[in-house]
Amino acid sequence: MARLNVSLTNEMAKKIQDSADADGKTISSIITESVDLYLHLKEMGLSRSRLMRLLNYFEVVKAINAVPIPNILLDPTLNLALEKSKDKVMEMWCESARVAAEFIKTIEPDVRKLPEEIKEFSNFTPLGKMELKNEGDDVEFLLIGTGYSIGAAKVTAEAMKCFLSVYGVGDMQEMVSEGFAKVTGKLKQ
Image 1 (cartoon, rainbow, N blue to C red):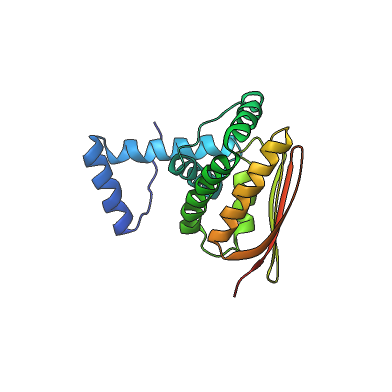
Image 2 (cartoon, rainbow, N blue to C red; image 1 turned 90 degrees about the vertical axis):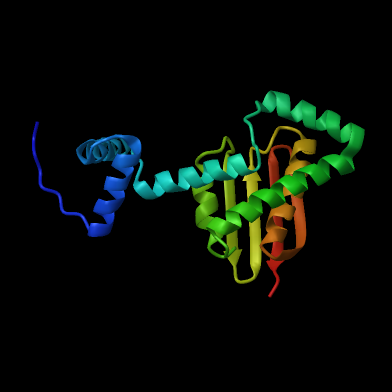
């Protein structure tokens, strides 16, 4: 086995020692596992920052208790629910979007900087496109692949408006069609 000298700050060395003690491992095994993980992530094309964003995404998913639902099940279920109680369905999706926005706001509180987070999160969703744009006070949120039905797109647009409202966006307009939802608005000063 190769031996290397590694320089660490005193603070990092203490953290590694504390982790090793807590896990019943040696410092050497902690460092070996860490390097192995780093190399594995690199082989997968993942950087540390991308991994951290992925973990943030999973925290958002966990915070809203999201579960993957096949689109062929989601669209018909949404449409049945909309037939029974459109207002209640819209209210539920709106509340879920607010919870997600409040959590994401802890990661990125400024809507002007949110497009990068949204771009990263989009890599982990089945959507064809998820994009947030800011130009001055104008905000545009676009989702493509939001379900096949107009009902699913309307529900999605409502959730998008509720999401943006948490960031102080108002005067919102929506455009929807099958599989497409776009919400535009103005950032309130």
